Image (tube, rainbow, N blue to C red; front, side):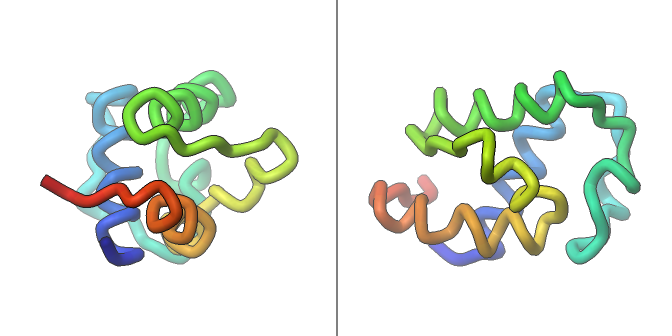
Length: 88
């Protein structure tokens, strides 16, 4: 699994919780909240889906590390690798 795979997983989760959002133009380096209509509940849903689907825990103190796709990839990639998560 690569950091790009992690970014795709995050985008897929966003697509599930905010199906009306156009994710085709999301820029990796920009804050997700600046690009999409995501509120704090949507963000919590992302964190909950990471835990439910992949067993990835994100402590509240680390939420700011998930503000862009790039930062999601950087922060989550080691967690996915530690869990041994592989894409089907």
